[in-house]
Length: 323
Length: 102
Image (cartoon, rainbow over all chains, first blue to last red; front, side, top):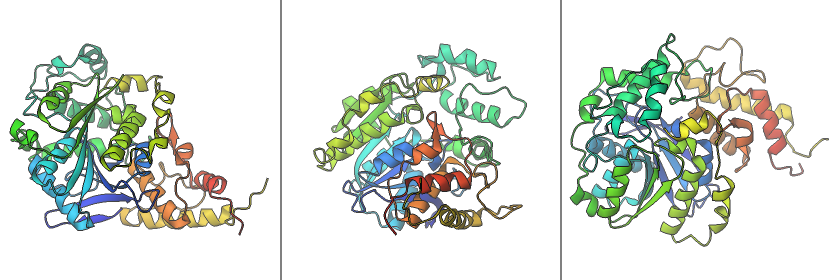
């Protein structure tokens, strides 16, 4: 896997050339969220998007196989990492697709480097200026999840202001503890059985212990209402209808001048995993429209949404669908 | 029935083993046996989802074939398969690489 030796950090990345070498939709960079890696992106999503674009996926600092420096886990710093990566790869203008925290990095790049960002797709991103707290109690599906998590030995304060981060950490601890009961869903899923199967969960725990990330995540992310109003790039907000970050989705509609909101039905925060085809199709439509290719690529979308309306309806995927 | 793919299954397996050797070189792994058709990507090589993705990109470049239905070989119930051997992947390629005459 290539490593980009950038001025500030070494980042691990993967280039996926478009099916068509000319990549008519241009360059698209995938930015994963916290406690994940570039392996977060489902194969089917990567392959669908590469019909239109050449793709780059990378590991955020402290994640996957990128370096884990002890500081630098703020949105502005991680956005600078992304810009350095674009410079390194010679990518002048790109579309950005970010899940969760990765979406905030993408938006920050669009606000500070408008000449580099053609469009942004936010997949279930919470912005702290619009939604200061992420209390588990506010999550519609918490009454369903609380007993499931309790059975896995996970007890959390439902009133803590950053319940999402606490939940990720508790699940990582449970997954890496050989004596803990099984988690209700394999959140840090990698193909089972491998020698490094707990790598992602272990890395998230190490990141908390060894770096400033817990402090950095609470810093000003530079994405206040005035900044969001000034973003000129088209923004697609894709949000799971059961997601705890829906308040951000709705407020963005008021603020961002070129924002389109698309709800992913029967899905939660991790809809890229539970509903990969919805992510792929909505993104393709948006990217095709942004690049004036909507008619050329219409055949990619025909009928697909309905055909896969019930993807992964079975257990345990349906459990994942609400997460 | 024999197909007309110019690469035999053995050729494909050999090429795959070379690709994998290349990939894992930087991983600092100690393998008991050299990579062969029986090597399991996940149990023996410790593959993660990202490695499967990288392998596909490498296969597409090495074999000059894009857009093969890799999901058939690598996906199951919406997630990645829990195991696949080099031989199984080679068989998939043999079945799916464009069947042009040699």
